[in-house]
Amino acid sequence: MNTSIYNFNKFVFGALLFVFSNCADYLDKEPFDVITPEKVWQDSKVINAVLVNLYDKMYLEQFNDWYREAWRLQNPSTMSDEAQGSFQKDPLFDNPNATYTYENSLFGAKFSDRWYPGIRNCNDFLNQLQDAALEDTEKKALEAEVRFIRVWHYFSLVKRYGGVPLIIESQVYAPDNLENLQVPRNKEVEVYDFIVNECLEIANSLPLNRDAAGRYRVDKCTALALCSRAALYAGAIAKYGTVQLDGVIGIPSSEAQRFFQKAYDASKEVINSGKYSLYNKKPDDKSQNYCDIFTKTTNGDNVWGSKRNIQKVYSEKQRENTD
Image (tube, rainbow, N blue to C red; front, top):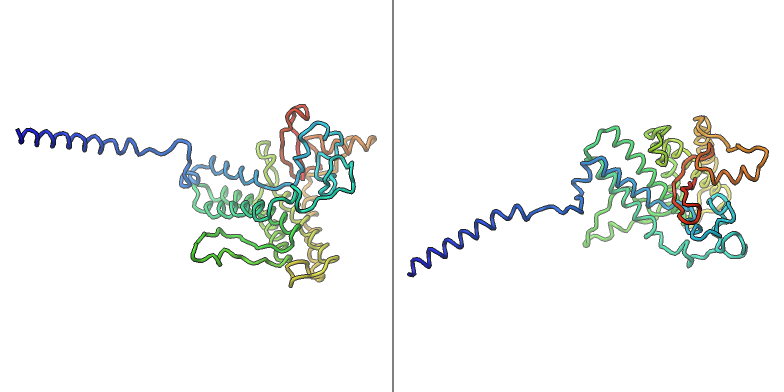
């Protein structure tokens, strides 16, 4: 009797061991709703999806919050940051004395929350891209795009705060070495130099023209245009501003001409590309011609644009924000 029970227990134990050992592989499945980092950099479509997210995190200062109700569109100039009152608080210029303070929504987020997460994501992308399963030419083009996005973040920062920490490598959190993450502020001139030099370098890796599918991606002239704008800012700061905090704020006056020349050269190259022209489809009606600059989705005045859907406000049509 005892022998039978012993043999039966051995049989049950063996059967259970067989079942569970065979179920191990079956139960060890990868989730269907999660893409692991290792897989991301092996698939060009997924890599481009990550790039789209980096574009989406760019702070383009398009005043999109103005498009919530139809009455906000009474004045066409409010449809563009080109003509919007500078950080004006009330819509349609109906209160010219109202201005934003840092407590208002436009400046509500700390710069460390608004821009540096985007910079960190760009640095991580550039780091991972080196081992991606892509041709070298495609890697170089993607690298140039992401470097543009990163300098856009820095331009948004420096024109508000002056010198900020330049972080261009991925940082690793180490609880026992927090000092390594505490990067001091660079001088303002160093940040502008970084932006200008990056734009000039990546311009040669970006295409001059893109097809319809890539219409809203940056190209060579986009990088040169940002170079020109940033250099013009830096030159004006050098010429008319003062240096404070050992250069964290302000640029030495001796740098003005250098930056102005950079701005001129970059703009000249954009003009000589032959891609653009001042919008003048209605020369006999200057008011309507001006309005059409912001309502027509294609015009030779647009160096770079982003598409937005304004539902139930603007006839559910797509319109374009330009920069």
